[in-house]
Length: 110
Image (cartoon, rainbow, N blue to C red; front, side):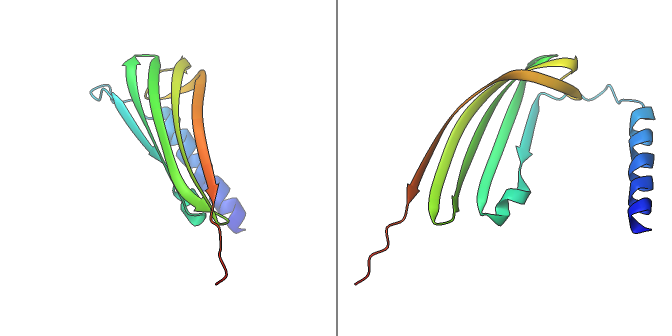
């Protein structure tokens, strides 16, 4: 029963979101994305994307954390072309390049 209620609410919100008139007074130029589910590991990842044109964006991403006694950090850059929609609401296609570094902790028994 609970599953049906959650599905119905999700469907209603999706239809309302599609029918809602877009507010054209906003002109977004920057997007900041976090990944809170990764805090469980613990890993912190942030991504900032800048609109360089209506259908193009550039993003930088950084991550740092520790997983299973292995410390890690990463830096990445991404180019996005919004082939469907635009920077505010769209599907993207692009290129991603990144560098990641890991190191293990050595345990010494004294």
